[in-house]
Length: 445
Ligand SMILES: Cc1cc2nc3c(=O)[nH]c(=O)nc-3n(C[C@H](O)[C@H](O)[C@H](O)COP(=O)(O)OP(=O)(O)OC[C@H]3O[C@@H](n4cnc5c(N)ncnc54)[C@H](O)[C@@H]3O)c2cc1C
Image (cartoon, rainbow, N blue to C red):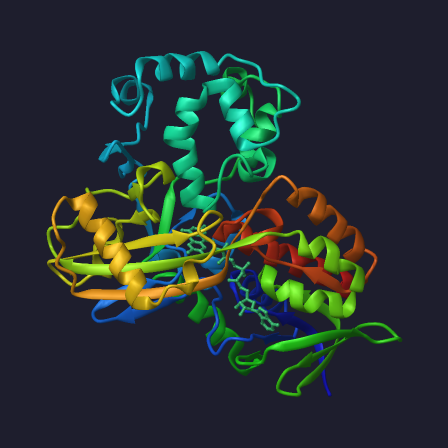
């Protein structure tokens, strides 16, 4: 049995952020990761001259925790700012429309009818209703169904691979919710006084992909990160602390544990320590997603900009596609384009049963449909995420509160991961840093 000061289970961004914070504070940390490589959903793969992202491509500048991690790893100069105005497109009636980025563009846009625009303008002044909890209810009451179906639903499909009728507004769009609640009006919230913020607006990417950040943490941890070391169970030690048992027979004893797995790992592991956790953890929903990266000689099938969102009623299996080579041209060889499409989610849960060939064929066909001609594809690659996107659905807050109530009384037990506070990279990192802070508090008590 190996005695460890702290153990982190899972080397996704949450686990890596926790481990790096602990290491920076001079605490000895052992990381146990089931996969043969670190990063979890966030990893980058050089492939046939392209640099592919298996999962996330970009991050928002809204978390000090992520900027702190980037700074400490010496990667600040590697951050590229995506042009905040890079066009986003949405499909309607077999045409791509640019998503308006301001009031004038909105009024001139052909994406919405005159009635839809009028309803949206009136919605800025309308109060909501205390019973509005889902994203769909919140949006419909203010802006009408046209805006929700045409714009909000595709955005929700692109971010959460989900449906606005299932998502909890307070968890899916917490900033808007905190300013207005269920019933507040938007205009006073927009122009009212807000707390001073250190947030940087905009969207960013690392030049070498998220793999650059993952490798930097992995290098720092060296042999303290144990890959292909899947944890099988966690047991409580009667005198205090935990015994972590891996499938390869490793046993690690520690007083401070951070469980930083995705929802799938949590379902498998936590009930071995806390049998009552099986019920709330079972209620945490997570949907599968496949990413399909395609590349070929220019011209690109997508307009310059961020990419395209594809509403379900437009007859696509793709939820959307990022125009990677438009955002970061160095990710594709000269004279070539690169796009990464997302498929799967709440309404397409069997997506991972498709073979790579089927996924490549579907995506090529649908991108060709967008381009209006058959595409010449010279590179295709599939990545799969069984536990792709945790769902901030209407039941998730209750489930998380029940879970926290079970974990809180256990000294030294901490959870981290993007299912807790928000699905994004920055929220995953923040959850890891917060878990590390709790460990540091315990150790100094
Ligand atoms: C396709 C896709 C695109 C995305 N795009 C974006 C984006 O552009 N921007 C953005 O902000 N966010 C994006 N996200 C979300 C972002 O990727 C996640 O928020 C983040 O990567 C989650 O990190 P995590 O550490 O919580 O979980 P994970 O990355 O899932 O890490 C969990 C780790 O735990 C390990 N593990 C599980 N069980 C065990 C066990 N028993 N023993 C040991 N290890 C175990 C797993 O192998 C894994 O490495 C995207 C997600 C997906 C799937």
